[in-house]
Length: 360
Image (tube, rainbow, N blue to C red):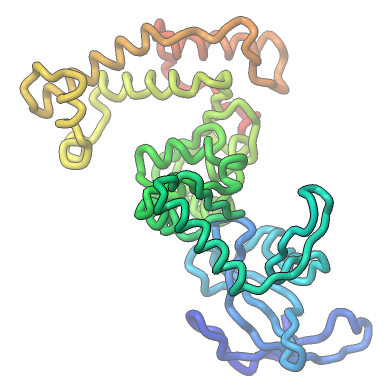
């Protein structure tokens, strides 16, 4: 990168080095410039990939941003949003201090305020609501939450259910499933050591977290892991999958229940893992309270429930949009008929019908 070489190195969270390299703006002349290297993190999505900021030692201005090879998640790789962070830092319309509206709402009048004034006003008005029993009048709105639930715990301690963020109009639907079974809406699965990876619909890997997760998924596939994607779209992950099942929108739950039914009926699960880690006693108390609370009874109840749910699952209406395909119309309809049979439980194909050259 720098023809003049490095005079130090970057370790951990501190900058201990400087870099001398040619100034690209001086080309074709070879002008050497020196930069201080400062580790930082990208926050253009919640993957938080590691970056290195190259700072002018004279003006403290950031010259450029690159991936940090010491970062354990991104390992030096970054998408286009990482280096583009410099545009946000230098944006002439960036707000650097509090602004208070002047005049009627929508008139566009603003004046600069001090941080002390803003914090005092907020604290006074929030306390007034809490003391008067109107905690839910307070709404905490943040552009991108990155504190892993800390703000939620603070609000809950005040009896307030008012956390809002751009996630509500961004990826909340994709995160709901993660939150229900993993306790967090931004998990980091051990993709690198997986043998089989299943991604469903608007999964995080199709957008958020795609860089760190994509690296591990690619490593797993190089070692022989199979990738299956259930997604109505031919997304970036579906296009690289070994198996692509473009289910009708809204039928993913039916597909998952059919898969759970096969796993239970054919005894394809790790019994000891489930016995130790699944809250099967709670499940039995709710679904089969008359049964003796044993693990075997839990399996019997689970099999009964997957059979019953599978048979009562509603069929997609005739007007439901169908997955688009680059194949011929006849082949597409044939695939959809097989999907209906899988969800309806009449017949389970011996092998996936989605693992075609189109998805590789």
